[in-house]
Length: 112
Length: 389
Image 1 (cartoon, rainbow over the protein chains, first blue to last red):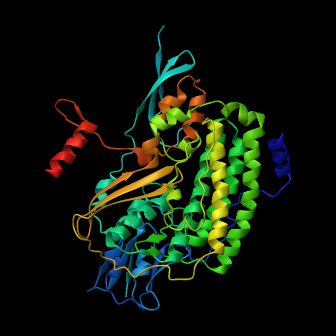
Image 2 (cartoon, rainbow over the protein chains, first blue to last red; image 1 turned 180 degrees about the vertical axis):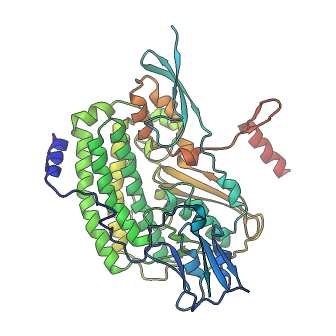
């Protein structure tokens, strides 16, 4: 009977689900979303590429390019931790909608 | 009289991960069973050996999506003991905080699945809705719902601030009330109780013999909890192990609910007495540890005792051996499903809260002779003698 009372109560209360694409969830501060790169502060020290647990980041020092494979990235945020510049050049953004058509679109390359 | 062999799995509606159980049935009654693993092997122990110590933290987290904080905590604890460092007090408290939050969500998941296996979807959805409260807290604290990446060698990565503390307190208050409500439903609601009471019975004597870990052994009345050793901050938080009596499915569920309440109490206390200090020591990204050093570290994961054995090979581990809780628990399944009906199998299986992907191990098979290589206790003792000279 206890469970039935709860079920009846819930018929008249607000749904606990969210109409997702229309209604966005609230993102807490410090959320670890897609990694973003700041070209103005980066000094190409390679620390983020060396410390990445899945080797998702590749850096070309000569051509001054910084690229990341989002398919490999595990969103741990270690690249942000080890970055020596101030402000940090590698940051976790609040972007979480990352689905794409095609694998090659996960390979993001940035130029200085 | 014939008994028949009934395959359960690898693909079965009651299973979330693949496992194969050969049930020997006589009519509706189960007279025996055999467990066949090997659908989930990920080769994680081996791949630890090709990673730096610090990178292994993220790998250990991916052994299990539900108890990731325990794996990292145990792995880091082992490395810290190899390096001979002690983490700051605040980091110990934050590790406990994250672990206990994860324990609540893991237990709620397990209990929700028990409700689902007995066919009560309503209860399953209610439990999972309330579980969202914990998931949101985890996201707030660590930046992700699962795979927290919170523990690093030498401490934790993020601190807890006052605003977060208030939110945690608010959500936990709501949760505590819900725990009492669910405990009442499991105990008194006829549709739940009739399916799970006196089912899947594991007596105290058998429990001692088979020696499972976690809530499964505590529900049989044996007080075995690694947290009682007082690692991290459990000593200061005055942890007391929760035990039950009887060891049926209902008791295993109730022990989990009571453990959730105990976790809530500990989180409250941890937040009240959070010491002021640094949250992490300054550890370089590449750690060098003297080759050949060994350590064993253990923590209490939601499913039971989790053990890491580690041997150093310089800047990488030479060997990491993991004994996950389900590995030590799964064999009780044969004992506890014998004598019950086929419809009880999913319920009993869910009640031991198995995690198949941590359990899978490798078997060495000779291709020519099709013989499996089994290392017996005798072999292990011989190995030890050889080593000692």
